[in-house]
Length: 497
View 1 (cartoon, rainbow, N blue to C red):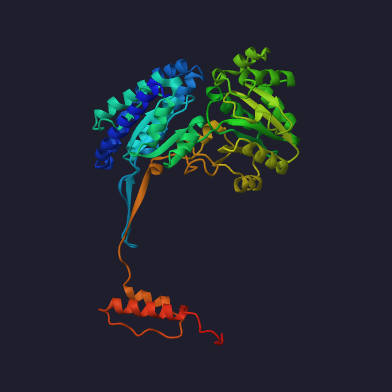
View 2: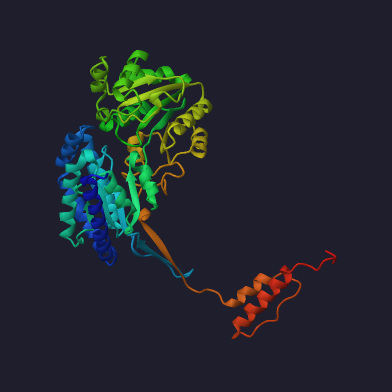
């Protein structure tokens, strides 16, 4: 029997979706300049409270590092906001007088959004800015482990937006969070799009909603250090990326594959910079800390520091340890080091050359079927090209830390907190999500040719239809259709070819 919370949550989902649909009609009537002013006001308000929101988020979720969460919030309020300036998402987008083709941006409607406990504030702020920029309303189902911090952040955004004309209900969230309510929200007739960022457990329900789905999947991506790489720089990038927010970034590296001829230099570089290579016994003990015996993740271990995890596992690495490294030989189905760990922990493989490393990357990428990012450190253009052409991922990053490159901080990819999955069937796009993913384009085509062009369809036939008078286009159309039917009619039985 459905409990009271479920019933309340379902009813609230219906009310919020209906209110959002009414508010979205008002948003759709606003010019781009008004939407831009609202976005700027909301970004200013979030930036002013960024540190307190980061601290609140870390304390409530008990994972990650508040200073790194602050960096992610500021990334959204500054870099993502900057990338939105000057974009036209609604109204006339393109007017090509020469070809007689226009493009008009049209909002999708109401967006149902789910955010991860790993980056709840930065993701909520980012998705709100994208939605309003593109004239859409958005309703959030808050993460149960980040309720208060997300509620606080969204209240700040709503207050700032309303002061600049944001309609009531255009940005909303469910006070009572229950799975039944979230499902009701995603299935509601007024919802046009579902956006799930990093909440894998809700993916089946999101897909079952029957709505278009943007899925910002987990990364679980390998990184390959090829023999031509600048080893010291590559290792420094990997350690900075994997230790950022204690390994919570979705595109952060999961496993390292090393070209065998440079393995001694790579190992030494890791050890010199805070990478601790665990013994087989230590690696096994750590997995008992991260997972239950039945394979379920111990959720309170997510986003803990390397030293804290080691202490819980019963061993003591050096004080400056930033990342725990587990040497592995094979990609076995039962090996938990092939799973996404969301901690500063790396699997470590050694292969004799780039071709073997290529196969190892494929094995790792396909192990959980939803990896979205692969990284390569190399100066060999042909090796990079082969990886780019053949790997089933949404994004290949080259010579950068994956956590930062995937979100568009150290690369020129679209700055985003939601990074589309690279596996077919996991959402409608593999893009770094921008406001252009939240609109459809209406095309306008002006007549450029008369109906006399239909005569080209009969070109090469046994006879040419008689020309029609310029004021008789229907006669021309009939003549062309008669000729097409005559040439398509089968020959009588017994006749020669």
